[in-house]
Amino acid sequence: MKIFSNLAISLDGKIATRKRELFLLGTKHDHQEMQRLRKKADLILIGASTLRGYKKPNLISGQKRQPINAIVSSSLDGISPRWPFFTDPQIRRVLFVGPNTPAHRLRKFEKTSEIVILNRPTKRAPAATQIVTWCNKNGLKSLLVEGGGAVMWDFTSAHLIQEYHVTLTPKIIGGEKAATLVDGEGFLAKAILNLKLKSQKVIGDEIFLVYEKL
Ligand SMILES: NC(=O)c1ccc[n+]([C@@H]2O[C@H](COP(=O)([O-])OP(=O)(O)OC[C@H]3O[C@@H](n4cnc5c(N)ncnc54)[C@H](OP(=O)(O)O)[C@@H]3O)[C@@H](O)[C@H]2O)c1
Image (cartoon, rainbow, N blue to C red; front, side, top):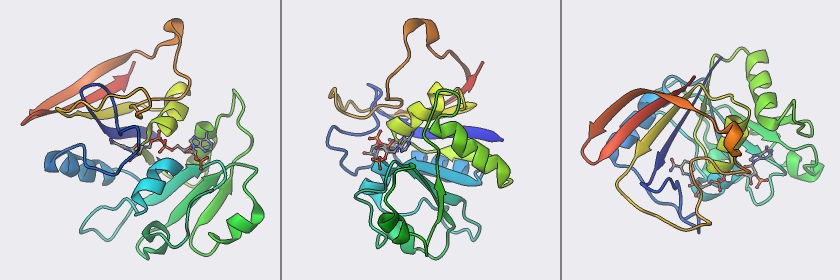
């Protein structure tokens, strides 16, 4: 299965402000690139924090076939089934949830979403690997990770992303608590992930980069 990511970053590598406010980092060119990449995806995955901010599904505009919209969350806390993400009739939804999600909370999402309860993550089977296994079992051919930084770490640390699509935008966000392209625990020097530049394209003040796994 093809696994790729697509996020926009500021010059200092951030994907959001420290308050996780909702704002557009990229221009319309970045939006077009996002739409182009979504067309290659059977499933788009985001983290629960990204959903808490956006609340809407991740769609391809003007197209009938939509990728499965999936989220990963430890317990679905602070997520409402009334959000447009859950009420949009166009999409199939999958919720990958932690094993301790309370049953009463799961019931609120049963009608609108497929719920996949993850096993407690281990070194050999982190959440990302379990999600990929589910995708393979369900015959999916491509998984697009759209962030944020916590979910990116899950996939990056398990060496699962084959292509990193990154839009470098001419902005500086700053802040040690602002989300970055890849957060989590981070690698130590001996384990740093090395990538190879596959393509680059400059449009206006943005640079569209594609890095691939070695
Ligand atoms: N610039 C861009 O291209 C871009 C793209 C995407 C997002 N963003 C922004 O990035 C910010 C969010 O990023 P973030 O790093 O704070 O959060 P995130 O990655 O969107 O979501 C983190 C949450 O995902 C769940 N999660 C992650 N790994 C998990 C695991 N292994 N098992 C179970 N649940 C897991 C947890 O949900 P629970 O809290 O439910 O436990 C965790 O708190 C938002 O402001 C968003 O707008 C920007």
